[in-house]
Length: 492
View 1 (spheres, one colour):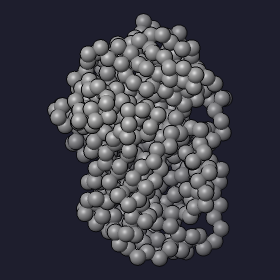
View 2 (cartoon, one colour):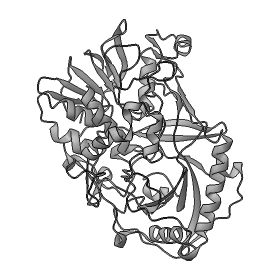
View 3 (tube, one colour):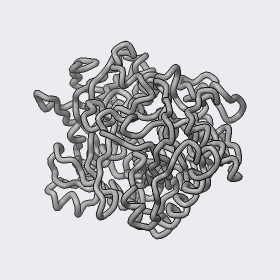
């Protein structure tokens, strides 16, 4: 469909991107009938679950392959010698509409990198407000939020999930029944925002149920190319469709386009490192060198194996049912190969993911040109830290021990590992958890937005997505992103 709503000329506030954060903000801000809210989404729109295609409904499939119409593909440099591709959601719900349903909170200690007003104690009420936890109640959990959170019951576990949990327990790792509780560590089930095999993400929970509000317009298949300013004050947006370029007048813009597209759009609009922008002929509105700088993500080492006997995976089995969390490492026994999980990805082997959750290496996003149609350069700079390489080597060694133990050894046969820095690089991927490319902070020299998500040095511009997380959390960031959006809606 061309648009969920007609083409607006103006708005009180425009939300750029209808992903996880944009869906929450649009739903919340439009609760005020006097506020005219417009959402601009570059991907296709749907008015309800009945319009969703099967691959968006089926939580057992990750529709992020090379031919997916639901994602933006970006070429990236994982290391100086290894390139790759990442996919970011391009549909109502964004990446939260195409992910594996992993809905785990950041740990208490993760918030030590955040401004003091974002302590765990202050954000816990918002974590609770977004969820209805089917398995746990009490002070840590919500009971009436719009997003269901549940864990797969033991009887539904895939053989690899059960075998991995058994060997992890036998190796002395503690039981971790509730990964959304403070102090979580060990082996246990993954909290999932999945109900009856269907993802229930922020678009389904916050945006789509409210599309009939007269003060809410969602313009899909439309791409924002620049934020417009008079001096340092926002005056509108330049947007493009397949047929035209237009302007939407507004005095408030909230960027929720994601941790790649948001810094890309800021730089195109004149907000970023002044020397970098000037070299490309972009007039500088605000000199903020940290736009696109020092981002973090979770590097993932894929340890392949083969099954000794045929193993059946039932329809809509989540990609991940259990994880082992040990300090800086998360181990993920995937229930299918990426070739089976991702349509169009080609053949793939079953694998165990060994993920560095507290990396030291930092990446950078920079423009290649002032043309909005040119994707930016995304350099992860994974494995540049000697500490990161050492931690991953130790973790892969432990993963190899677990794969040769007890029920794991009877279920699968690992491929031989000749562990070295080169082996790590050859088996390197990314968890697609990019964060911190427009960090939140108090000091303008070290951040892009303040504690209330306002972009430093300009008026009327906010950023609310994983780009503002000071560092990538030590768990996947989706639940934290939704929490941030809900809290930011109280500022706006």
